[in-house]
Image (cartoon, rainbow, N blue to C red; front, side):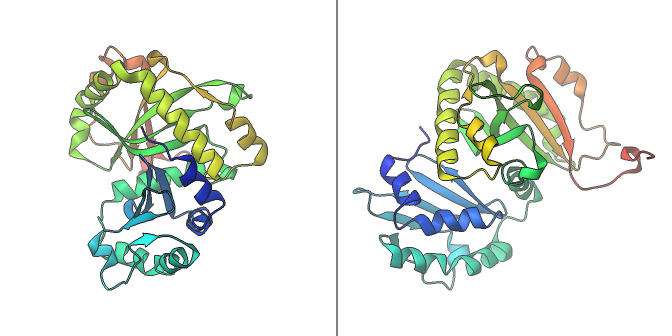
Length: 282
């Protein structure tokens, strides 16, 4: 189950790992994801750091992809303020190495930009908040997961829907068979819906506790009271199409509409590419 121990949480909030948490909160190009007793910190969709709690929980193993750590001397473990400061001092060069040697797919970069736009930009006041990235359960691997908090009915102690998002950039060939992909994901999650909702509830609350949502204070206080529904019929399956060419025939919505859970599927069109078809007069 994805969660951090109490010791790991305390070290991030009050101990020698506070600098790691502060670096993430101060740089919205970094994204921290909670795993099973470890965290991943992403930059441009690539893992810049995997930090794993060791036993006893006063040591944390540092793992960085060799391509990103090339030419750098990094501490093998973070054990105190000194080793943490040593690693933090290498982050600018690590980011540059990710730019030079990382995966160049805009799709994974957009995943992280979606997280930023919804979690870290309070002026957006969006209705979706991202909880996890690259969530894998059996045959299902969702690019993003989160909740939908309808702005028309917002209040404390609400039950909210879990959202499972598949991101496709431009004319990704997988778009032609995305209905089959969504079906596999539905079938994989149906037997374990309650466990998946419970795990996301845990991650959501730990992220809130760590201050990993940059929102207005009253909104954050209300978010802490939200409960994620375990009712599978309330799960939303969201296809996020980024810079999808509206003139393309790759997306066959009729195949999605024919699925027995079509009422749970939503398609979101976004991105920065521009076509006249999407223009309107003022």
